[in-house]
Length: 623
Image (tube, rainbow, N blue to C red; front, top):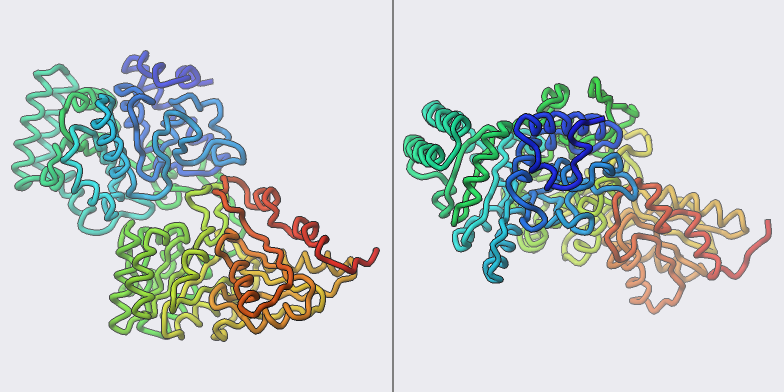
């Protein structure tokens, strides 16, 4: 039983503790994080790194009156523990439990929901401007990791920030997003943090504030900071944007953080606090394996070991297949937006390091960068999660498809993303890409077909998109050499006369189960692996539509504008009135939970489809 954490029912309880007690609270929070996330899985590394920062913020500020905006918000577990949700923490990322990210409907202390990077500064600025317009005096604090500053939206916000009266940006600098941060911005922050003269002068100022506190000490410390910044260079990047810059400070020094936040709270203009933290602090496995412990499934809290199924994931098959394609074609390049581990391109990188590009959390740039390479004869494979490619929609349309450039969008996490919830579910990519001219869109039924689709995209003289699900595949063996598929041609797995089931991607297996159920009641059933969401196989749809009494479409995607909609459009174009039963996700944001349970809840199962089929079927043979 924790001595202090269990007594924290609201941020007000944090303010009642002394410094020694706060230090002990930090230890208890780390213990709770390590043991709790071991059972549920989640973003353990980022949260271990912000324990002291979050405690200090709640000690000095007053949520929900004051607003904390977390960039990405996967580092909000400590915030949840301190805002009345400690007793529910074992439910995090579990069905019906706490969300793994900030969620406005979950708590009044969650001022802004997020799951994608780069959103905090713009949202916080909007809140600050709204406060000023309303004559309020509450504080707005944005906590953003250094990786968020590889994202263009952050700079769009900085460009407008000087116009507001006051707000606080906490730059949580741990040198990592999921993988090691890349690019000039990461190097810039590193230069600040490691400049010997700056560090020496800053440390003296820190000791002064920590030892004496008070207005005079903080004034002297501020002067020391200004002198140090003059030595490092003529003006920091934030100062050039009109913000006062403070730091870097030790992001694990609670007394120093509290005194600093008290000082920043009194500032009358936007400020940046640069805090240096250690991702995974307090848990040796997380310190040693930063990428793995950014976010993972359940693990042993004593050793950090995780269970392995021994079966390859779709991501791994993608990376291995891309490596084979690159071995035979020197124009093949791989691009990721700070997700080499999530997309498994870290497996590609050792084989072709000069043809591997990590552009940071900058999806728009990744797509434009790929377009530029394609104009010079290269074949870019742009590996971006389905949910993150949404951010680059304009670049897909305007810069790739309009110019008919052979860029391949490899959309990992196409479909439900389980425990990560609505910010990460890839349920919209067919809808937002199906209307784009020149682009073909594919969805494999298994790992071998994924490899074939990648080869098809490589051979295609135009843009392509391939969506594939999170997690392990079917276990099918992948051919030594891929084959090119005929574009827009479906695969008839089983012929039939009464019912035709058109299934896309990982719903093919469910379609085959549905077919067996229907056959058990005497119906002749065709099963078609659609393969292409665009262009669909119109000849196949018309052929089965003309002789079957029911068509069924199945997709791991929203129904609105999805594959089923494409089938309906095809039938309408040919003036055919055959009934179509569409199986897919409803027009709502799907909560987090186990994939199987969510499919059952929302009717994406063979059993649910069977019951919905009955009213359309004329001939039912008793068994």
